[in-house]
Length: 479
Image 1: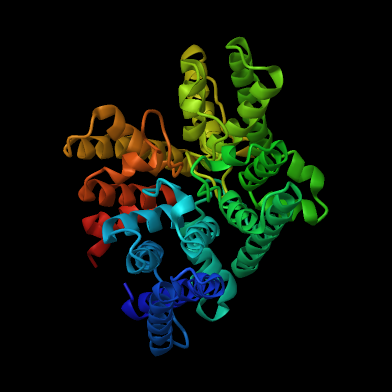
Image 2: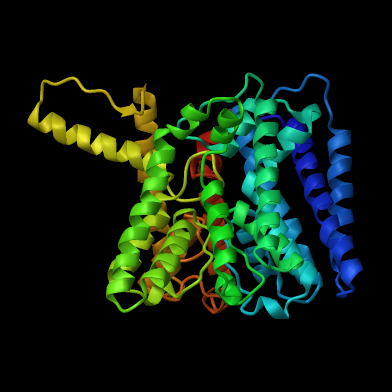
């Protein structure tokens, strides 16, 4: 490992986190909600410390190893979340553990919260929650690589550790250019979200906050009842469109803008992603309709919740946990599947589910035709054996993490169902599951050690397991 290189990169990341806190600092000063110092102190401290470390550790020809990358990504996320928790504590809103839980849920876009009534929280703190999700959506490290070429060493490795695209397809020959393209797409989607919500009748403050948390598929809202509080079809359609667009691989937007619209629209993962939303909407709406809802209401709620839970956003317009067992089961499956690779959503990702299904079908086919030679395909591409091993390993670790986390939480006296649901909600960065999981009161009442444990699973899910787990192995620290 190279401590100087690690410190240099982390200094830049922390300085960026401190700079981001200046936005709610200025907003608190503007609206006079009494939290100017609660933001100014940690913002300036983090910015100054990060900048000092960055400039003191600069090197002309730095070299970064794989182990450096994993430490930079993981420690960068933990450090920024820790710094981001300070305003919640200084303002007196919550204690250190709850504040760290809230901040990590923001930066990982999990959306879990201990705040039961956002309407009673100062506007600047609500804005900071939304900004943390927005920053976490594109990725602290990815933004760092895009806007700071001076520290772009090992950019390819940093991008791979951050984006975790199971079937990567680089957009440009320079990885920093790729990062800039993705950041531009992200910014345009955010701007489009703000404009569409304003046109739908939402107020400026609510529009900005919900655009930030929609494009990041994070799900923090300024209202206790989430999107249901607005009771507006126009608002729901705007947010549904935003969630679906943000659940698509951002690289497809670049291909479409580059004149390869047919290639983008024909992407097999995109077609399956949209097909899942359509099929879920049809089945859930049919179930709601037979249960007594009107056709319009059933379709409206089914479409919104299907898009929300598939992308892991977690916004609600209805109490889906009170729907029929069939609907509940189907929507929970959507949380597991998740959105597309290369998007801000959580879950396994559509491409991995497709490859797992393809692998299973291939094994069944071989049982019937043992001498047949078959290839595992993803669209027109043949998947090499190393990738097959990778996604099978990922799925095993995913299941193992769910089991291990559940058992650890049961040691706190939490019922098995709630223990599993809370780990499930965090590792899929959806912030919700069946039962009480997802309610602010549920997370607020958890023991402090359980909250800290869940922040680990949020980080694990956001960085797609291996980036975090590798640094916990003894071999990582040897040599």
